[in-house]
Amino acid sequence: MKVLGIGNAIVDVICKIEDSFLTENNLTKSTMKLVDETEFKKLLLNLKIKETIAGGSVANSIVGLSQLGNPVSFIGKINDDELGNKYEKSLTNEKVKYCYKKKKETIPTGTCLILITPDSERTMCTFLGIAGKVSANDIDENAVKNSELVFLEGYLWDEGEPKTAFNKAISLSKKTAMTLSDKFCVERHKKSFLDLLINKLDITFANEQEILSLIDAKNFDEVISFAKQLRKLIIITRSDKGSIAIQSNYIFECNSQKNLKIVDLTGAGDLFASGFLHGYINNLTVNESLKKGTEMASKIIQKIGARLN
Picture 1 (cartoon, rainbow, N blue to C red):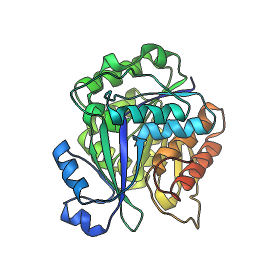
Picture 2 (cartoon, rainbow, N blue to C red):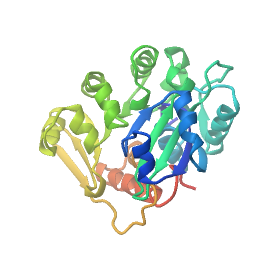
Picture 3 (cartoon, one colour):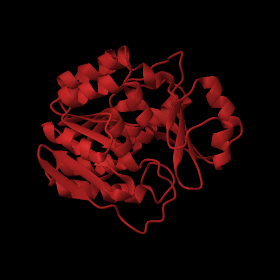
Picture 4 (cartoon, helix red, strand yellow):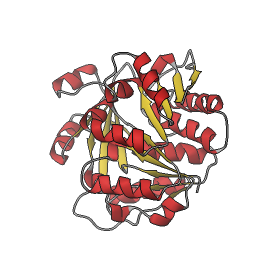
């Protein structure tokens, strides 16, 4: 396999809302909040579902890589329930090899409520369910060893079993990449993420907010100085300012595409990562990889949801 993704196996429930819904439910726009099953069901009571689809950040990236013609696989924990079966089927339909054997669990398959406001921003409320219980035993050693690169999801990181799963995957992999996932996620796990970036990862994906938060930088120049000191590949998306990759003393930049009809920013970072990794594993230059990431992100933000047809 070219790339193995390890992340939260989450079923996305997509709804369009007004900004007032966020205020009424004490939600912060453009962030991801973890909720329990009770709160999830309460939020859903007052919503009209637009679309339901298998998701999860790294899973979205892996599907994008598959659609670009790369042999890929995925590990994510699901229950042997209705949503879990739909999740597995949706991945295998996209020619993604699913490297996890589901079984009957007491905790249901994870679900994410994606709330899209009129400005196309998305706010997420996630009930992790069984997805957040991934352990070292869930990591298929052969799948890791037989992949050129392992792509890890920051959302999945937590102390305890998920941490042991991460460490096992990293120790067995040839090359490792990770997405920082979300600013709140970074703030919860800052020390651990910084250690991973400096000592264990080969490639790190972040947006500007996440990387500024991770290193407590006052401005973007501090980010560039920090990244230059590492012998790593750091890729940062900067919204309408485009994207940048930093590798040792080299800086590569790519402009964002203009005049797009943006309808939903869900999956922009996920598909950017799939485009960049497609270039990386197929020996394109860093500039070409940034352009491919930008192309994929530009396509996905012009449709609802995080999957290209």
